[in-house]
Length: 552
Image (cartoon, rainbow, N blue to C red; front, top):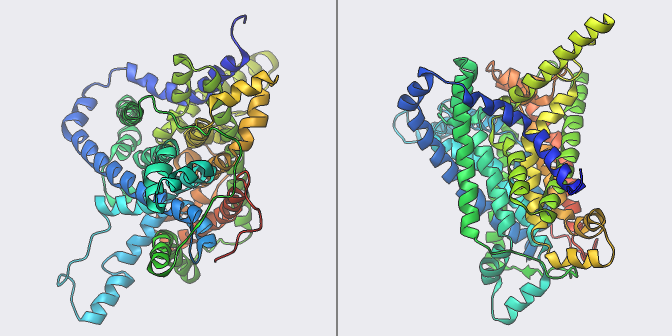
């Protein structure tokens, strides 16, 4: 088509492909919901709004504080155990929220080991003392914070690694100490990455189902599931999903309005080794404690509980079958991560070189799948692909007398498609934040020297964004490993994953047996997280690979 660049066409094609499930689901809004919607609005909708608001506020604030603070400590400070915490702070990301909810419920309930030990030591009886109820809104928000803070930590750390030493040197010459530099220089420059991380946290919180359902907390997500799959009211459920999506859009628009026209660029592609502030005495102890507590409470303790359950009452089918389950999980997750990061890079760069309202809207629509519950995305994919399979089989039967079966809706392809549509926002936010920090003058200089748009992306931008691309890959990989609703609905026949096995046992109240699959999910995710975390540290241009002192 004359006058339309290939980049614009590619941007539109990717946006349309990824947004297809959302479009299919929200097409149900055009149909009348009858009395069901009025009943929901007058009875449960206010409770959904209130619970969702407090959940978002608590989790967003907690993850921002923990993620940003620990990222600055491990990037800019020297203290005992720093090299270990660089990757250890990512470990809670490998624990599904529903798994940590089960583990802490078993540990903190009245008959659990903690309260039993408390009564044994004090001689108290049940009712003689106050103990917080973990199965509450506050308990759910706390546990979700412990699992999701690595989103902010990972993107903040990548942003701090990419920052320019020149800017920090200017701050120091003006008399700024480490903490003033953190508050007045590093955080403002990293705002796009921090906002991207918190946005992912908020969307994951809005989408959370397993933990809040187990704790009996009514949110938009539980309402959508109950309305769609319990009441069978697809139209009313789609309208609830529209309210959820509107909630996310309002949050994004408010942040962009508060940012105004401010932009955050690197003005040079020359990097030096980042300086490190050596901490001693109580400061080193405080830094150690600040990094240790999230790892201890968010990973070590629940993993220990699951390990104890697995050793005492593990899955009776543990063995060779788990090799296949692990291979399925790893293959699907790795494929989704590579495709999602590649699409996010093309989307972000397409918007950069064609910054039109249509391009911006297309990219935002394509990345909104993360705000929709996984099962709703799965239904949005299943409807058109099931129709495509049926149409193809009818045509083949009429013309050739053959039926080929479920080519699309019965293969792993549809599952990878669901993961990409669901988690594209994860990689898009990370890549967009990093690309937005590259000054446009570099694009102009590259084009003046004869580079094409693709060459500029490949030779200039991609090397500068290695940390953020790796961070995006980690997030998509681990999220796909834990994804449950879409996997259950779309997986091919006789094709299970670790997440499906863990949930099927836990839903039957067989938590001890489910602990085996849950631990396998964690183990399968730990090694890539550690390797990619180390690669992120080495990926900063100008870094001295292998010369860092190991303080761990």
